Length: 104
Image (tube, rainbow, N blue to C red; front, side):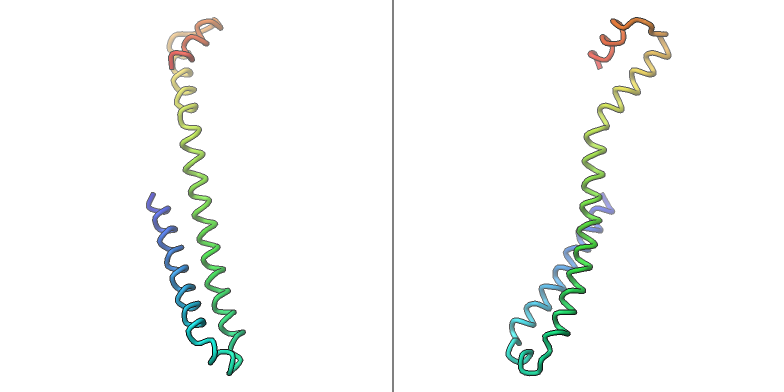
């Protein structure tokens, strides 16, 4: 969760920087057009957006890892419990196997 929080706050930081640049551009659009500074401002906005997208991808990967671990954890615990039960009790019967899986 610490890495998730780090990526989330990092994403917010880049989004804030990008929105600050966008607000500056919108407030000074006449000056920017007059001096033909569009390209430099567009480049700055695109760089901020690129960094924001990188952080967003890392954040999405963290969310995917979390979802996979939450979805497969019960099955893995069930398998581990069954393996321990089978090793301890020397299970050979299919009926005992399915009954033990159903109880877990």
